[in-house]
Length: 340
Ligand SMILES: [Zn+2]
Image (cartoon, rainbow, N blue to C red; front, top):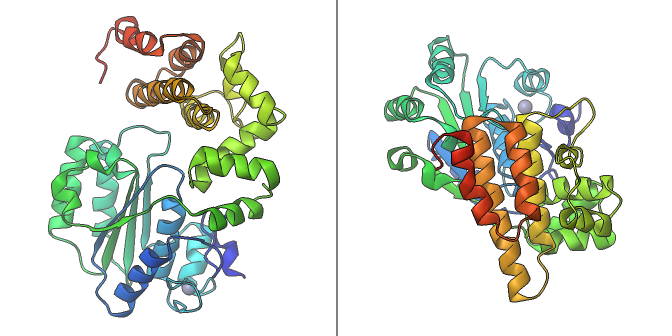
Protein backbone atom coordinates (compact mmCIF):
# COMPACT_ATOMS: atom_id res chain seq x y z
CA UNK A 1 0.00 0.00 0.00
CA UNK A 2 1.34 3.40 -0.93
CA UNK A 3 1.55 6.06 1.73
CA UNK A 4 -0.75 8.21 -0.35
CA UNK A 5 -3.55 5.67 0.09
CA UNK A 6 -3.92 6.41 3.79
CA UNK A 7 -6.57 9.03 3.21
CA UNK A 8 -8.18 10.79 0.28
CA UNK A 9 -5.83 12.87 -1.88
CA UNK A 10 -4.70 16.16 -0.35
CA UNK A 11 -6.79 15.27 2.71
CA UNK A 12 -3.74 13.53 4.14
CA UNK A 13 -1.26 12.63 1.46
CA UNK A 14 1.69 11.48 3.55
CA UNK A 15 4.20 11.04 0.74
CA UNK A 16 7.34 13.16 0.44
CA UNK A 17 5.73 15.46 -2.09
CA UNK A 18 2.31 15.12 -0.52
CA UNK A 19 2.39 18.44 1.23
CA UNK A 20 3.93 21.59 -0.22
CA UNK A 21 5.05 24.82 1.37
CA UNK A 22 5.51 25.93 4.99
CA UNK A 23 9.00 24.37 4.87
CA UNK A 24 10.72 26.19 7.72
CA UNK A 25 7.88 25.45 10.11
CA UNK A 26 7.85 21.79 9.12
CA UNK A 27 11.62 21.66 9.56
CA UNK A 28 11.12 23.01 13.08
CA UNK A 29 8.61 20.26 13.80
CA UNK A 30 11.00 17.64 12.40
CA UNK A 31 13.87 18.90 14.56
CA UNK A 32 11.64 18.85 17.64
CA UNK A 33 10.55 15.30 16.86
CA UNK A 34 14.08 14.02 16.24
CA UNK A 35 15.43 15.53 19.41
CA UNK A 36 12.45 14.37 21.50
CA UNK A 37 11.59 17.97 22.36
CA UNK A 38 8.12 18.13 20.82
CA UNK A 39 5.62 19.30 23.40
CA UNK A 40 2.46 17.36 24.21
CA UNK A 41 0.13 20.12 22.98
CA UNK A 42 0.26 21.96 19.67
CA UNK A 43 -1.80 24.74 18.19
CA UNK A 44 -1.76 24.97 14.40
CA UNK A 45 -3.25 28.29 13.36
CA UNK A 46 -3.71 30.29 10.16
CA UNK A 47 -6.39 31.52 7.75
CA UNK A 48 -9.07 29.17 6.45
CA UNK A 49 -8.16 27.05 3.46
CA UNK A 50 -4.42 27.39 3.95
CA UNK A 51 -3.70 23.71 4.64
CA UNK A 52 -3.79 23.42 8.45
CA UNK A 53 -6.04 20.38 8.41
CA UNK A 54 -3.84 18.51 5.94
CA UNK A 55 -0.65 19.35 7.77
CA UNK A 56 -1.97 18.38 11.15
CA UNK A 57 -3.36 15.04 9.95
CA UNK A 58 -0.02 14.34 8.33
CA UNK A 59 1.66 15.06 11.66
CA UNK A 60 -0.84 12.92 13.54
CA UNK A 61 -0.07 9.95 11.27
CA UNK A 62 3.64 10.57 11.72
CA UNK A 63 3.40 10.70 15.51
CA UNK A 64 1.55 7.38 15.52
CA UNK A 65 3.63 5.63 12.83
CA UNK A 66 5.87 2.83 14.05
CA UNK A 67 8.49 3.59 11.44
CA UNK A 68 8.51 7.33 10.65
CA UNK A 69 10.65 8.20 7.64
CA UNK A 70 13.18 10.97 7.46
CA UNK A 71 13.38 11.59 3.76
CA UNK A 72 13.71 14.59 1.54
CA UNK A 73 10.62 16.32 2.95
CA UNK A 74 11.27 19.00 5.59
CA UNK A 75 9.27 17.04 8.17
CA UNK A 76 9.29 13.29 8.86
CA UNK A 77 6.51 11.24 7.24
CA UNK A 78 4.42 8.28 8.27
CA UNK A 79 5.64 5.12 6.51
CA UNK A 80 2.18 4.29 5.18
CA UNK A 81 2.34 0.52 5.76
CA UNK A 82 3.03 -0.27 9.43
CA UNK A 83 0.17 -1.53 11.61
CA UNK A 84 -0.53 2.00 12.84
CA UNK A 85 -0.68 3.50 9.36
CA UNK A 86 -2.96 0.65 8.25
CA UNK A 87 -5.27 1.18 11.21
CA UNK A 88 -5.47 4.90 10.45
CA UNK A 89 -6.35 4.08 6.87
CA UNK A 90 -9.20 1.84 7.90
CA UNK A 91 -10.40 4.40 10.43
CA UNK A 92 -10.05 2.25 13.54
CA UNK A 93 -6.83 3.31 15.18
CA UNK A 94 -7.27 2.83 18.92
CA UNK A 95 -4.76 5.58 19.64
CA UNK A 96 -6.32 8.25 17.45
CA UNK A 97 -9.27 10.46 18.27
CA UNK A 98 -10.47 13.26 16.04
CA UNK A 99 -13.04 15.84 17.12
CA UNK A 100 -14.03 17.77 14.03
CA UNK A 101 -16.45 20.66 14.16
CA UNK A 102 -16.55 21.40 10.43
CA UNK A 103 -20.09 22.57 9.77
CA UNK A 104 -21.41 21.09 13.00
CA UNK A 105 -21.28 24.17 15.20
CA UNK A 106 -20.04 24.68 18.73
CA UNK A 107 -18.53 21.81 20.68
CA UNK A 108 -20.44 20.99 23.81
CA UNK A 109 -19.08 19.43 26.95
CA UNK A 110 -20.55 16.04 25.91
CA UNK A 111 -18.00 15.81 23.10
CA UNK A 112 -15.23 16.46 25.59
CA UNK A 113 -16.37 13.40 27.48
CA UNK A 114 -15.32 11.42 24.40
CA UNK A 115 -11.80 12.60 25.11
CA UNK A 116 -12.02 11.59 28.75
CA UNK A 117 -13.38 8.20 27.77
CA UNK A 118 -10.63 7.80 25.16
CA UNK A 119 -8.00 8.66 27.76
CA UNK A 120 -9.46 6.18 30.23
CA UNK A 121 -8.88 3.28 27.84
CA UNK A 122 -5.71 1.26 28.15
CA UNK A 123 -3.13 2.71 25.79
CA UNK A 124 -0.84 0.71 23.60
CA UNK A 125 1.85 3.26 22.82
CA UNK A 126 1.43 6.84 21.77
CA UNK A 127 -1.95 8.53 21.39
CA UNK A 128 -3.03 11.55 19.37
CA UNK A 129 -6.12 13.70 19.90
CA UNK A 130 -6.92 16.15 17.13
CA UNK A 131 -9.44 18.97 17.62
CA UNK A 132 -10.45 20.88 14.49
CA UNK A 133 -11.53 23.68 15.07
CA UNK A 134 -10.56 24.20 18.69
CA UNK A 135 -11.99 27.74 18.82
CA UNK A 136 -15.44 26.18 18.53
CA UNK A 137 -15.26 24.74 22.04
CA UNK A 138 -17.92 26.21 24.28
CA UNK A 139 -16.70 27.67 27.55
CA UNK A 140 -17.39 24.58 29.63
CA UNK A 141 -15.76 22.34 27.03
CA UNK A 142 -12.73 24.64 26.75
CA UNK A 143 -12.30 24.54 30.53
CA UNK A 144 -12.46 20.75 30.46
CA UNK A 145 -9.76 20.69 27.79
CA UNK A 146 -7.62 23.08 29.81
CA UNK A 147 -7.83 20.78 32.79
CA UNK A 148 -6.63 17.86 30.67
CA UNK A 149 -3.77 19.92 29.24
CA UNK A 150 -2.72 20.98 32.71
CA UNK A 151 -2.13 17.38 33.70
CA UNK A 152 -1.25 15.81 30.38
CA UNK A 153 -1.48 12.04 30.23
CA UNK A 154 1.75 10.28 29.29
CA UNK A 155 2.52 9.62 25.62
CA UNK A 156 -0.45 11.68 24.46
CA UNK A 157 -0.25 14.47 21.91
CA UNK A 158 -2.94 17.10 21.43
CA UNK A 159 -3.18 18.79 18.04
CA UNK A 160 -5.47 21.82 18.07
CA UNK A 161 -6.40 23.51 14.80
CA UNK A 162 -7.84 27.00 14.61
CA UNK A 163 -8.31 29.80 12.13
CA UNK A 164 -9.51 32.09 14.92
CA UNK A 165 -6.94 31.50 17.66
CA UNK A 166 -7.87 34.80 19.33
CA UNK A 167 -11.07 33.09 20.42
CA UNK A 168 -9.24 30.37 22.33
CA UNK A 169 -8.71 30.59 26.06
CA UNK A 170 -5.33 32.26 26.61
CA UNK A 171 -4.57 29.61 29.18
CA UNK A 172 -5.02 26.92 26.51
CA UNK A 173 -2.86 28.79 23.98
CA UNK A 174 -0.08 29.26 26.52
CA UNK A 175 0.10 25.49 27.06
CA UNK A 176 0.61 24.82 23.36
CA UNK A 177 3.56 24.91 21.05
CA UNK A 178 2.35 27.29 18.34
CA UNK A 179 2.65 26.81 14.59
CA UNK A 180 1.39 29.64 12.41
CA UNK A 181 0.71 29.01 8.74
CA UNK A 182 0.89 31.95 6.35
CA UNK A 183 -0.19 32.19 2.70
CA UNK A 184 1.65 29.98 0.22
CA UNK A 185 3.98 31.49 -2.35
CA UNK A 186 2.94 31.37 -6.00
CA UNK A 187 4.94 28.27 -7.04
CA UNK A 188 3.79 25.76 -4.42
CA UNK A 189 0.28 27.20 -4.65
CA UNK A 190 0.11 26.70 -8.43
CA UNK A 191 1.62 23.22 -8.10
CA UNK A 192 -1.07 22.14 -5.64
CA UNK A 193 -3.77 23.46 -7.96
CA UNK A 194 -2.11 21.72 -10.91
CA UNK A 195 -2.28 18.41 -9.04
CA UNK A 196 -6.01 18.96 -8.77
CA UNK A 197 -6.29 19.66 -12.46
CA UNK A 198 -6.64 23.43 -12.11
CA UNK A 199 -4.27 25.25 -14.46
CA UNK A 200 -3.93 28.28 -16.75
CA UNK A 201 -6.00 31.43 -16.34
CA UNK A 202 -8.23 29.94 -13.67
CA UNK A 203 -5.22 29.00 -11.52
CA UNK A 204 -3.73 32.50 -11.86
CA UNK A 205 -7.09 34.09 -11.09
CA UNK A 206 -7.43 31.91 -8.00
CA UNK A 207 -3.93 32.76 -6.79
CA UNK A 208 -4.68 36.44 -6.99
CA UNK A 209 -8.16 35.99 -5.58
CA UNK A 210 -7.57 33.53 -2.77
CA UNK A 211 -4.27 34.94 -1.54
CA UNK A 212 -2.16 31.79 -1.30
CA UNK A 213 -4.82 29.62 0.37
CA UNK A 214 -5.01 26.49 -1.80
CA UNK A 215 -7.94 24.90 0.03
CA UNK A 216 -10.05 28.02 -0.36
CA UNK A 217 -8.93 28.38 -3.98
CA UNK A 218 -9.91 24.82 -4.87
CA UNK A 219 -13.39 25.30 -3.42
CA UNK A 220 -13.83 28.53 -5.33
CA UNK A 221 -12.38 26.95 -8.49
CA UNK A 222 -14.88 24.09 -8.23
CA UNK A 223 -17.77 26.56 -8.02
CA UNK A 224 -16.42 28.61 -10.93
CA UNK A 225 -16.10 25.52 -13.12
CA UNK A 226 -19.53 24.30 -12.11
CA UNK A 227 -21.21 27.48 -13.31
CA UNK A 228 -19.27 27.69 -16.57
CA UNK A 229 -16.19 29.82 -15.96
CA UNK A 230 -14.86 32.97 -14.37
CA UNK A 231 -17.18 35.31 -16.28
CA UNK A 232 -20.30 33.29 -15.50
CA UNK A 233 -19.43 33.15 -11.81
CA UNK A 234 -18.91 36.92 -11.69
CA UNK A 235 -22.30 37.37 -13.30
CA UNK A 236 -24.00 35.27 -10.63
CA UNK A 237 -22.46 37.46 -7.92
CA UNK A 238 -23.87 40.50 -9.73
CA UNK A 239 -27.27 39.09 -10.62
CA UNK A 240 -28.25 36.85 -7.76
CA UNK A 241 -30.65 34.03 -8.70
CA UNK A 242 -34.31 34.59 -7.81
CA UNK A 243 -34.22 31.60 -5.50
CA UNK A 244 -31.19 32.16 -3.25
CA UNK A 245 -31.06 28.43 -2.54
CA UNK A 246 -29.71 28.10 -6.09
CA UNK A 247 -26.50 29.71 -4.80
CA UNK A 248 -25.87 26.60 -2.73
CA UNK A 249 -25.95 24.41 -5.84
CA UNK A 250 -22.71 26.15 -6.86
CA UNK A 251 -20.91 24.19 -4.19
CA UNK A 252 -22.97 20.99 -3.90
CA UNK A 253 -21.16 17.74 -4.47
CA UNK A 254 -22.72 14.43 -5.34
CA UNK A 255 -25.10 13.18 -2.69
CA UNK A 256 -25.18 16.47 -0.81
CA UNK A 257 -28.22 18.59 -0.18
CA UNK A 258 -29.18 21.98 1.18
CA UNK A 259 -28.23 21.99 4.84
CA UNK A 260 -26.21 24.01 7.34
CA UNK A 261 -22.93 22.48 6.25
CA UNK A 262 -23.40 23.14 2.54
CA UNK A 263 -24.71 26.65 3.23
CA UNK A 264 -21.66 27.28 5.40
CA UNK A 265 -19.40 26.19 2.53
CA UNK A 266 -21.37 28.37 0.11
CA UNK A 267 -20.78 31.36 2.37
CA UNK A 268 -17.03 30.76 2.21
CA UNK A 269 -17.05 30.35 -1.56
CA UNK A 270 -19.12 33.46 -2.17
CA UNK A 271 -17.02 35.48 0.28
CA UNK A 272 -13.82 34.40 -1.46
CA UNK A 273 -15.49 34.98 -4.82
CA UNK A 274 -16.46 38.54 -3.92
CA UNK A 275 -12.90 39.22 -2.90
CA UNK A 276 -11.47 37.59 -6.03
CA UNK A 277 -13.72 39.85 -8.13
CA UNK A 278 -12.94 42.93 -6.04
CA UNK A 279 -11.67 44.96 -9.01
CA UNK A 280 -9.03 47.66 -9.02
CA UNK A 281 -10.69 50.80 -7.73
CA UNK A 282 -10.72 51.78 -4.09
CA UNK A 283 -14.49 51.91 -4.18
CA UNK A 284 -14.90 48.41 -5.63
CA UNK A 285 -12.42 46.99 -3.12
CA UNK A 286 -14.26 48.59 -0.23
CA UNK A 287 -17.52 47.27 -1.56
CA UNK A 288 -16.10 43.73 -1.78
CA UNK A 289 -14.52 43.99 1.67
CA UNK A 290 -17.79 45.09 3.28
CA UNK A 291 -19.78 42.32 1.63
CA UNK A 292 -17.19 39.71 2.55
CA UNK A 293 -17.25 40.91 6.15
CA UNK A 294 -21.06 40.76 6.22
CA UNK A 295 -20.93 37.18 4.92
CA UNK A 296 -18.55 36.24 7.72
CA UNK A 297 -21.10 37.65 10.20
CA UNK A 298 -23.74 35.49 8.56
CA UNK A 299 -21.45 32.47 8.84
CA UNK A 300 -21.14 33.06 12.58
CA UNK A 301 -24.87 33.46 12.83
CA UNK A 302 -25.37 30.12 11.09
CA UNK A 303 -22.84 28.51 13.41
CA UNK A 304 -24.74 29.66 16.47
CA UNK A 305 -28.40 29.54 15.54
CA UNK A 306 -28.45 27.26 12.58
CA UNK A 307 -31.17 28.69 10.35
CA UNK A 308 -29.78 27.76 6.95
CA UNK A 309 -32.85 29.07 5.10
CA UNK A 310 -32.77 32.45 6.75
CA UNK A 311 -29.03 32.83 6.28
CA UNK A 312 -29.11 32.02 2.56
CA UNK A 313 -31.92 34.59 2.13
CA UNK A 314 -29.73 37.11 3.92
CA UNK A 315 -26.77 36.24 1.66
CA UNK A 316 -28.87 37.11 -1.38
CA UNK A 317 -29.91 40.37 0.27
CA UNK A 318 -26.31 41.26 1.08
CA UNK A 319 -25.34 40.63 -2.56
CA UNK A 320 -28.24 42.67 -3.94
CA UNK A 321 -28.26 45.53 -1.47
CA UNK A 322 -26.38 48.79 -1.75
CA UNK A 323 -26.22 48.81 2.03
CA UNK A 324 -25.28 45.29 3.18
CA UNK A 325 -24.43 46.45 6.71
CA UNK A 326 -28.00 47.52 7.18
CA UNK A 327 -29.28 44.17 5.89
CA UNK A 328 -27.19 42.28 8.42
CA UNK A 329 -28.01 44.63 11.28
CA UNK A 330 -31.73 43.91 10.75
CA UNK A 331 -31.30 40.18 11.24
CA UNK A 332 -31.31 40.08 15.05
CA UNK A 333 -34.76 41.67 15.04
CA UNK A 334 -35.98 39.14 12.52
CA UNK A 335 -34.61 36.30 14.59
CA UNK A 336 -35.54 37.86 17.92
CA UNK A 337 -32.13 36.96 19.21
CA UNK A 338 -28.76 38.44 20.04
CA UNK A 339 -26.32 39.31 17.34
CA UNK A 340 -22.72 38.92 18.27
ZN1 LIG B 1 3.70 3.80 9.58
